[in-house]
Image 1 (cartoon, chains in turn cyan, brown):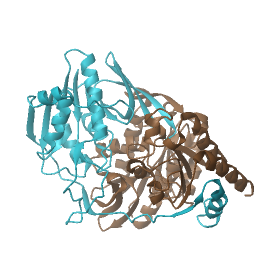
Image 2 (image 1 turned 60 degrees about the horizontal axis):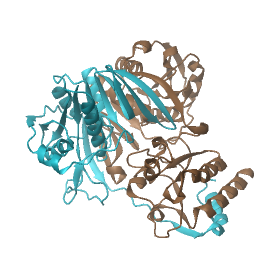
Image 3 (image 1 turned 90 degrees about the horizontal axis):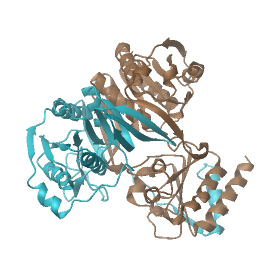
Length: 250
Length: 329
């Protein structure tokens, strides 16, 4: 099987973000970056399939400036076979522009499966995988939390609100990964050493004109800390009264 | 005057609340654009046409009804082809979808097929000259972006619960149409939809969400959360990532950065400390109540009302009090 995984370098979210001087982006100074979790689960799924199917190969692709090579190397250290950087000065917000650049690279790859994370927490739009599938005319299942592949066919589970869907699909296909599909392996020391020697090809990203402009980013208004109504079950009557008379939700 | 398209989500032949929210949003957007028409697409199995009047009541001038036996479940390829064809031939200025499992799957496919831009998880929108400008949360809601959509049409997917379905009766003319792609020929097939346990309400739609965390100590103690949700009568049950990772609840119940984003009228956090990853999924709730034994738990920083105490003591008392309060309504 030929498998591709598209990955993104994203900042750690466990910080207080600052707005950059242009007022239209987040200040990246001091942020820690890593492989997007959803994408790491995509890498893990690809590696499992490769190891179960002799002669398979996993290619990791990332669009962005040279710092994304670090993210590609992380996936290579987990065990992926080769990497491709689609070089661009920055990653645009417009998911369709990203999808077009990725589709341009993916179309000649004859991949049986192309994995994406279902979304990245930074831009949080969650559209690229489905768009790539549409541009390439491939079958697509988004936000999968289980996967079986056998005899050129796949079966996956999607989590809905309060329900689950079981979906069948033919290969080749594009899959976007939700939480619960697997636990991503950590790179071993041996894997990290091996990754340094794996091929990483750099190409210019064919990014079209973006149709979305981020005009402004701002911090949301701080939620006012509320009050402690009381301690233990004795506080319940007061809470219920507040929910009825003040919050008017009961 | 430019017209606006709305995609009305259904499940099991019933219109979802988010579907009426999409129609309401499309009506608001059409009015901001000068008062053009709203055309809503309703797809489902035979019989779904009977639901069309609700859509007219919420502001649609035209309801395009596509009935087909193959549409009992969501059919991504038939829905993509039908919505994209209709948006293209209708010459709409904008199209409105919902940011749900279905809408997140469908809207990007439609946008890519039409070659136009899409913003999902939209909190609000406005018209500014030639652009439709939307607010979109980034970085797990810690940053709010204002984004101009320069494509025609502009496609937006609304976050559930940010716009309440509003009655605004319009003609609601009904037009029957065929799917633009045969549902039976779809490569991707939904072979089964499994409802969650006990016919519970949908997390994205429920006006009240009661969520439990590690403070409940064991899977079986989730009964406390379920009982409280049942007492409200209009509540869905959610959980933290720690709890779904441990298998106490299915992943579909997880609220947070990697799970569901909810903004109900009332959010009750039971035994939840308030990790950043969890707060990302619920901090836009209108009213937040937290019950936790640790008075320094971060959840109290976002909660409007907190009770410091043992959940095993407080929650049964609260359940009883809510049941009483509901009786008198």
